[in-house]
Length: 371
Figure 1 (tube, one colour):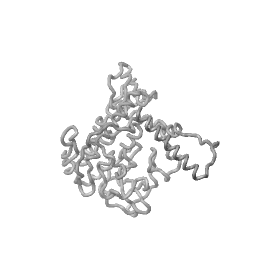
Figure 2 (figure 1 turned 135 degrees about the vertical axis):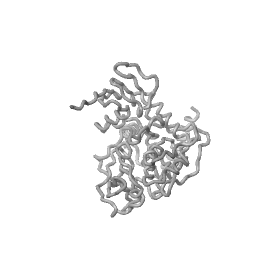
Figure 3 (figure 1 turned 60 degrees about the horizontal axis):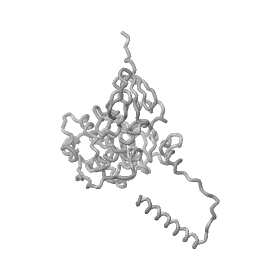
Figure 4 (figure 1 turned 90 degrees about the vertical axis):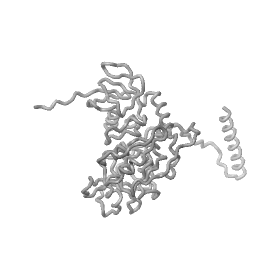
């Protein structure tokens, strides 16, 4: 009997039409557009809790909220509120606004501000810096100012196993580590304790973390809440070079990314896709114990498709494209050099001009504060 293929649903996302299978979410439809045309990658809503390999993830951080201006072809009425694109399934004829809707962009700024209320400014010392999704989210959608003046919540650091340390102060409660532990353990002995601003990942994870795949909670964490104790404070990711590698492993797929600093492997992680999601979980043996080049079969440099500081000075220009917002920012702030100005070499004149320029800058600052 011939297999009957499901009828595809048509959705319009930021003016771009795409056909998807029933059951596809708005987020997955947007990613399909970006995968077909990399130049449309900026259209994809950000995701801080959604993680495709983890079932039932999503719908908690509200970073991916979009406006559905037409619910479907049968019922073209708009949805009254913004909806999370990661858990909202598409309907035939649905029209979605993301980057084209100002309310969505304003709400996204508020979400960034909310996530940063208790998140500490640990970027200068955090091992996640340079590959942190919250950094990317704040840079692309956040504001340079903060209105929060209250005391931030703090927690003590906890060792959850011999290789993983939990910084609950940095946690944004995305639940990814909980869902990961749910997949790699037989019994559900993990979760989030307490409620509201007292919520925390705590002793449940300590019990669930004692297994051969516990290190995967490090890879799924979008911030620096779960860190690799064998890599802590050893290096910055932009000083290291990632290489795809594999080995014969009887516990996992053995496909990893090894991170070099010179000739030394300083850490091993699971391979991730374009959206920063792990393709296949790896075991602790591959992650923590195999730190010699002789342990691996190297396949070549890891392709960093999305713009990242990790790719700086390591990849050809045609392999890593600069993001649109960076080019627009450079174009808006570019100033032509005035070559008609006299070339001053006299030290007294330079000192006098410097004093004048400082006075002008102080007057501008006072005027801005008064306004």
